[in-house]
Length: 108
Image 1 (cartoon, one colour):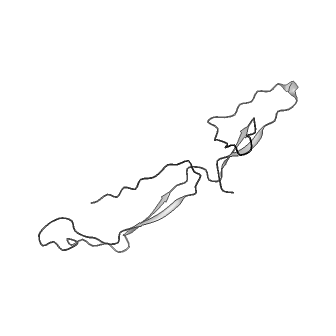
Image 2: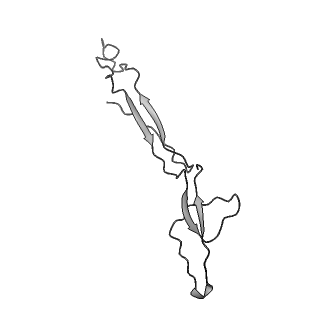
C-alpha cells in the first residue's frame, strides 16, 4: 500500500467548491527483487483508477448578510462579525437605524 498526501492551502479568499480528478496512469515495481516483472504482477484495476476530489467552499463566496450599526467606508473590507450584534435604544428615541451589509463574497 502507498499513500498520496495532498496539501491544501486554507486561505481566506472566497471561492466556490474546487474539484479535480486524481488518476493512476501506470504501475511500476520498485521492490528490487531479482526477476520481478515491471509491476511485480500488480496491475491497475479497470474502473478503479480515478477518484473525484472536492475541496468544499468554506469562505462564503456569495457573502454573508448581517446587521451592522455603522456603515463601512467606501472600499473598506467588511469582516464577518464574531458574535451577535446587540443594540440598546430608548423607547423615547422613536427609531433605531440598522444597516444590512454583505460581508465577504466576490460572487453575485
